[in-house]
Structures are given as C-alpha cells and as structure tokens.
Length: 169
Image (cartoon, rainbow, N blue to C red):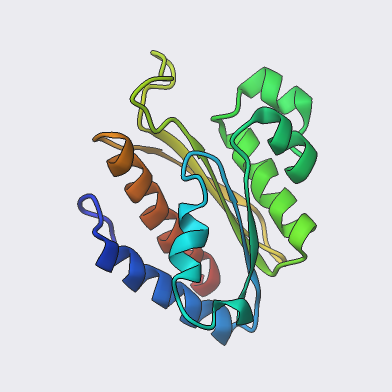
C-alpha cells in the first residue's frame, strides 16, 4: 500500500489494523520511539481494542537528552549528524528494541514545522527507521509537503506501512 496524499483518520486506522494483524501473526510485541509525531504512532496503534496483547510501549523523545538517556542515542551521533538524521533514527529504533525487549520497533525523527527547518533539512524532512529483533535496522528519508499536521499524518502512515514491510519481507 502506497501513500498518495495526506491520510485521513480512517486510513491511519486501517494501516494500524493491518499492523496489528501482522504483529500478532508473527507473535511479536511492537515498540515505538517517536520525536516529530509526539506519540501519534502509539496512539494510532492503541486506538485498537486489545492492543496490549501486541503493543509493548513507546517513548516520545522530543529532546536530544531523552533520545540519549532513554533510547541510548550516542551524544557523538547527535552532535555530528543532528537529531534529524539517518544515524540518529537507526540508534533510536535499536534503542527502542533494547529498552522494551520487543520483537519489532519503529522510530521517527523529523521537522514537522512550521519552523525549525534549514536549507539542508527543510520543514517536512523526516527519517523513519524500522528494525526486527532478528534483522538489520533500516531507515528511509522522506520529504513531506504540507503544514505541521500533514507532515505528521504522513509520517505516521509511512511508519505503519514500513512496519508491515519489515514484518512481511
């Protein structure tokens, strides 16, 4: 399933439902590490009744300090590459797996706007990372258009789509 526009609440619920089915089929627990989405991925997943059977928990890591202390992102990574980087999201997703003991995790970090962007990392720049306990972490860079809510909605959708891809590939 590919994202073609800013997803509606119904579309986010549909993707979350598919993730729930996939995670349960694999007999895994899922964890999240979120920055720019502020817990929206966890909210989409826990809107589903019975999610405690397959959703372990999530960390909202808005500050670099929380990324470091709760997710184990190295200070050197944050200083050298910044909070919005492939290196940081890969450490975030690995940290979420380790901290929660889950079988699969997703992490997001980005610039939702309307401020905070730069020429190198404009508003809408988002990194999403996924990792299965028995696999390699992977990350993908997105450049989303729209206002703050549009960027965040698109991030939640792509995060969920990527969890499905991680479980089915």
